[in-house]
Length: 452
Ligand code: S3P
Image (cartoon, rainbow, N blue to C red):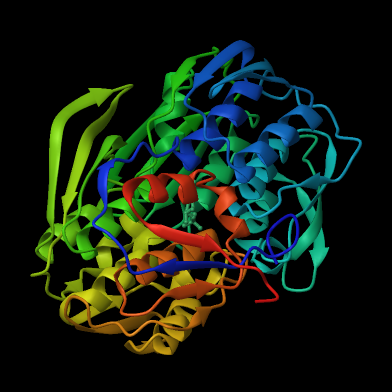
């Protein structure tokens, strides 16, 4: 099933070369944060380049339910009239975050230190995902959570009327958990401290500083120590959202494995907490270059140029790099299947609790398409036989997971036979223009009649 309707089966056929320019949409992580921090500041925040994927649209709707005025001016330009830290109103409807773990976890954090109650739900994928990782630290502030067994949505959060600041070490490497705690800390008096032993994406920290919060980050023996002073008055900002490296990954990887390809993906954010895939691809021997490197809005940005790379070899991806490419393992496994030799991906337990169990979903679909994959609790290994050796011909189940859907369609572009997915609908959560953009580069993707 797609996130919001009937399944959309799709097939990608071997075709190519892929050539031209791929203008991918705005960064999903930064888009959620721009809306939420805009809603927590006093005055009007202007946002350009907002990702208008379903996940972010659901967050925009939620911010309205909490009292912010959110306006779509067209063409990726949005404004948010915020209510200020501690100014959230109590929503009179259930907050439906659709497919978005980031949306629900960050919003829970943002409301947990206000004296209001809100009930959250999501689609079948989100309602299976663990929320205790967020509600455990929110309880330390004084918030209460009542949900389904195993800390699953639907769930009601009763915000703390008299929140206390917390000091919290994140038990899993998760930017969502870190961000939920920091957003809750905004309305607690005094200093809230979050310690992470592995660095995860730092967009919340950067954006909080941009909105005028007092926030410091120090590396210590304990890890990365982030200290936020509560109850600031956040100043509205002009935010230009950079293009999403996690979306760029799809046309980049497609170009590397489809013979003769040469694709330019301009204006991609290369924040080191996000760019692990590109480092890994270059280590595998990918012809991937950074052109026109520059700084935009405090983030390193470059135009990525990817050319067909028939000489790529498998590598052992360093486990300590996992957080900086956590969403990119599915598409990396597709590249690995077209490289020569073993690609080992270890220290990736978190992949099992994403929009789907991504190790299981990719391993099953890759095997069905003729690729040898081994997997364990927190690792998997793909045996690549070299360019053009993937048989294809099978249909993969996408389990309401956009990145699984896009990964298998790209597998089909470089396989010997077409590869199908049972439901490409979820692609709209993060990359609504994927189908048209890939077709423009020369890919052959078809929607299939389900009866066919
Ligand atoms: C995100 C954090 C990551 C990532 C997700 C976006 C964010 O999740 O997988 O797509 O914007 O904070 P975790 O925090 O669960 O690692």
